[in-house]
Length: 463
Image 1 (cartoon, rainbow, N blue to C red):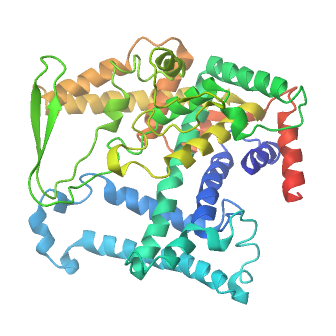
Image 2 (image 1 turned 180 degrees about the horizontal axis):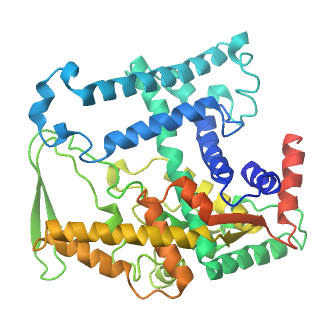
Image 3 (image 1 turned 180 degrees about the vertical axis):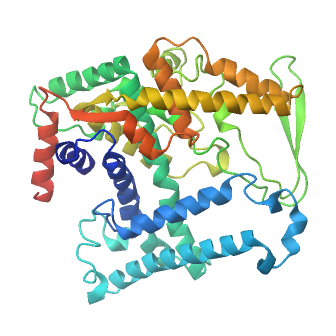
């Protein structure tokens, strides 16, 4: 609710269509939520220095995870050279030292507060104020208490705690940003979702319009759940997910069933190999998702009605629909290494998107069309280069097939904008600044929900 209230204030104080403060506030919201869970610490503003440092860490990790970033990945022999002549070693060592100092500092802050140090909360006014989670109940405190039991070193504790934050911050913010693009480019979807929430809230609250929705309310809004799942489908954590490596020595073999002839194929995974799943391809499979680049929450309603059990929207006999979308698609991974925070992320996304739909209308700016043309021009050049490099190979044919699929007959110009901009955003071809230039949030006229949010904030936080 704080996020929604502050976005509304930004509309009054910074009405410019190219202002990035709305996206900054969304990032602050997702970061602050996980900071409280991990360190019992709130991020008061988007300019919080801890958030700035954590953003640098996230960027460094994303750079290091980019396939082909360093020559040593293709030429392992280069790894024998010392750091003096190996720039990637110096860069990664520097990154590690920066993040270790940050993580250790956050962990020490938790320890000081656990010990009751007077200086823990006094050095920076409000630094640790406002957390709804007590220090002794946060994840860092739990890791410190069980450090000996789990045989963890100091660095292990610092990295395990920081990993909770790393995994749950920008991924959630990016999914909300994808929703903002979709809500802007697909007004019919937005109106339907808003009408569902309005109707339910008006009827379920005894026609009193001074309350905001609870998680229990959201369980009775299946179309909202479909919007969340479609946003997750189009915002995977990287096009290839997170790499995994076999933990046991030796050659690993998997038998894959073939649907066509009923036979099996054998897939061999060498020891220490890195396995990357084509999450982007799975989420754009035309057999599973017709018109995969079209933002269509209705596809999830159809899936739910056509089968007894659809993991993404589980029917609950007494409370409605589950808000846990862990298994709706592969946005949270799969198998034993599936994201452990997927349920929290699902609930966070559901409430954030519901409040945004309840309180705001979403407007498209003139810059959106200009960005679409620029991106399509870059895509055509990219596809052409790939085909010229590999004209007779599967790579070249795949590039041309991808271009053909992306040029499916669009429903209208808004649909074309949505397909291009959303896909460009998750591929990092559309920056946050460019995204901010495309959208504008305005308080809904004639609706009392934004005032209800403000009243609830005032009664809860005294502000």
